[in-house]
Length: 330
Ligand code: BGC
Image (tube, rainbow, N blue to C red; front, top):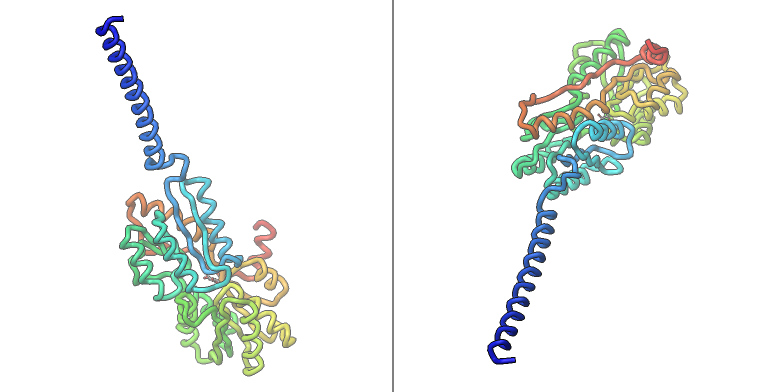
């Protein structure tokens, strides 16, 4: 082999090696790019929107209905609904959940705004580009996009009007309210008082809070009836107050000939007590509808459609006749 041939062979080998390296690094780079694209591009198998709904109490029939309504929208719309709340009513925990939702940069937040303590975080979420809708209890002073739920003041008035009618304007009342500090319970009491204050024969002699538990509602109603034996009507503003009030009257061997009971929400246990003649009237709210429509409303907000300041779900007066008609499919 002469020198020229050797140089030629060496150069060919070098060329081959460099081409092989180029091909190798090119395919590696392509592969890497693909991996980056996979990480940065949205996963088309995930729903288009991730919303969080924060209620008052997970372990509660009323909130279960709100959650079910919201979750059921997943079948119709391209959304993932994370339904959350404290196990037992706890506003601080609700605020922590709201803070986590903001930090997680979810697409939208639906929250029950129990009091003014919720304003700073609601406004923070909106400042950070996360729309907020209030549900069940409103925070009209906040920058939330809209509210869906009962008009709580009007619901209180409806309870008052019903009581005035049923007692012919003669009653000595004890009130059990879910909470003295929560906006919706305050409104339900204020609306009620507005109506009964027009009646000379009606007086509220005591008001206590149940912290939305049936046990406390029962204890407070029991003490109240002991202290004011002239009470002949009880008004309960939260979903489990009716159960507590009915238990207290039963413990004192009072019947609904002695006492008129009006309470909130047509939960199965309340309806059962109505069938047993222990509750006279229930003010019905629409928790399932609140949950379902809150997600539809949030979708409108996401799509930039105009929304109203508040959407009030229906509130009805329910008596035993209505329960019977419903069970007969009428
Ligand atoms: C209220 C809810 C509350 C529930 C408690 C309902 O009447 O609308 O906000 O959490 O009662 O029992």
